[in-house]
Length: 148
Image (cartoon, rainbow, N blue to C red; front, side):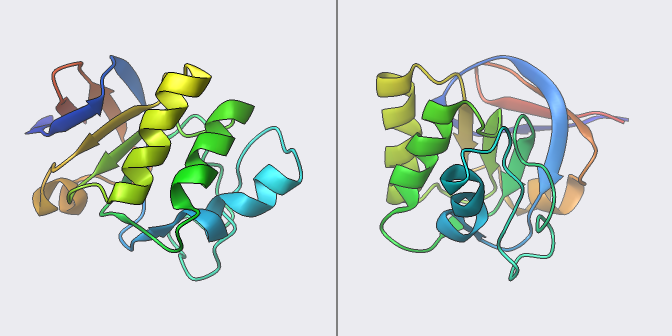
């Protein structure tokens, strides 16, 4: 049985893909920096303090998380990985997106024409329900369906 959630749309789109879940806040700099600096073809989670995503491929995944954390470079790091085309395909936040991540997502859409979807305010139940490897369908109106 699938489970449906509705959030606030920051960058709309329709997508079906694989979830990668972080139950801790995502430090964008620590997670994405190594792959970006190496001009890698994909992002491998490099934040040793986040065991949910450390060492896992993030590129092309639907990243499900509570929020982002870290320094003021967070938005720039997101915009950079989008410009490189190695970004997650979507970022789904259980909480409200923080201003730094929001700036990166919006700038990536405007400057890089990035199709990365971003939806926030999906609620704690969303993050308690979704598991890494689940198939998720995202609709333009902010509906997120976790499929069985």
